[in-house]
Amino acid sequence: MQIAGRPASQWLSARAADLTARVIARLVDESPVYRALPREEVDGEIAEIVHRNMELFATLVFERRAAYDSELVEQRNSAARRAEEGVPLEAVLHAYHLGIGMSSQDLFAAAQPGDMRDVQVLLTMVLDFLRRLTIAVSAAYLEERQIMESQENSGRRSLMSALVAGDPLDAVVHRTGLRLAPHYLALTLAIGENADERGSGVSGTVASRRKLRRLQGQLDRITGEPALTVIDSGGGTALIPCSASPPDWDELRATIERVRVVIGADMWVAGVVAAPGEVPDAVTLTADIVALVGRAGRPPGLYRLQDVLLEYQLSRPSAAHRELATLLDPLVGKPELMQTLETYVANGLNRRATAAALDVHANTVDYRMRRVAELIGRTPSDPADLPHIGAALVARRALG
Image (cartoon, rainbow, N blue to C red; front, side, top):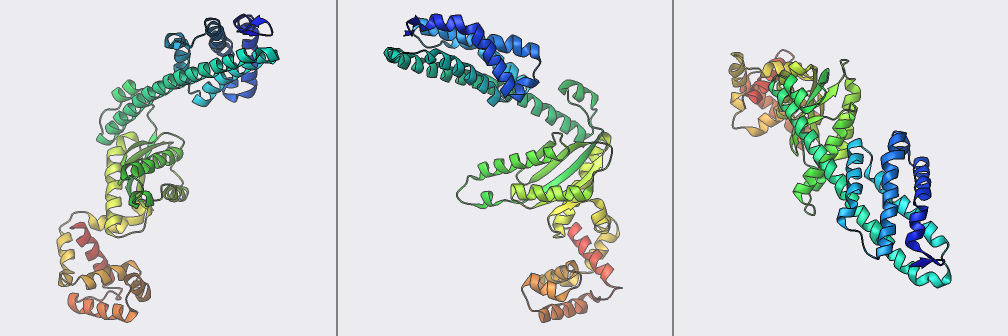
């Protein structure tokens, strides 16, 4: 095949060195990713791969054939090294497309009308070569990333397990190569279903995985460090590396609300900051808080121990537990009275808010509260009786 009276393979071989230099110059000029790489790497290994591609294509043109897989080994190895360095795949592919594109442009620029048949054949070979390169390079890159992520995830799981179990950490840190944070924001999460999971047109498994990917991404952004997580679609535990200074809890509440919007599901979250050795107790505490706010019917959001101090203390096992719970025994078997009492207390003794929540008339609330007072011998609206009633409700919830 000839272009302007000269064999195309000879033209490509003769121009390979000059084209390589021009490709590298343009690559560094156009791509911040390659501009940030060490210059010796760009002028060394990467330039060698560009030159190798041009020489290989010249051989393919001379022999009128497609590339063998064995001829793309160096390109695959180079892609794997770029994956290790964190160079994005799109930047890797851009380099190959740029090199092939500039070579083709120069090759066809001198073509004459009589060269059209050979130009068509060459163009078909260019596209086939680029296709094979793209497949080989992408596969090698993604395989290396998969191996790296598998090893990284395995290391994170090992570190997470050791932290939560209170096991010695030195061996785990040495084996995984992960850095131990000064402190961790321990979060326990209870997560509701989102619209995709409830919908009939989307696979529940796909919807759950999508929700979890979004959640993981949002948790990683809280401090900019990858979160250690054991979470399924219904909730779980997250340990987020953080500095010694406590987080801004108002800002963290706003962040949790943003996460809720992103995943499209309600979340009840409890958090506490703990040193590595304090993580087991922190996880136990946050799990208790989430269970407590769930039983109490608290709204979604972020909770700390300070937010539920009284309820938490009253929910701890004690000799007074059962005695407190028996205060409400007269309401057993009368679910409408028990529900109205709980709603009335939760709404700050506001009869209209209680009526709206239960979808009944306010007079019905008054009647039921009189019946409650008659049965238990205490009046919810009486400041002297209310603490006992509130404690009894907490005790009954704690006892299940």
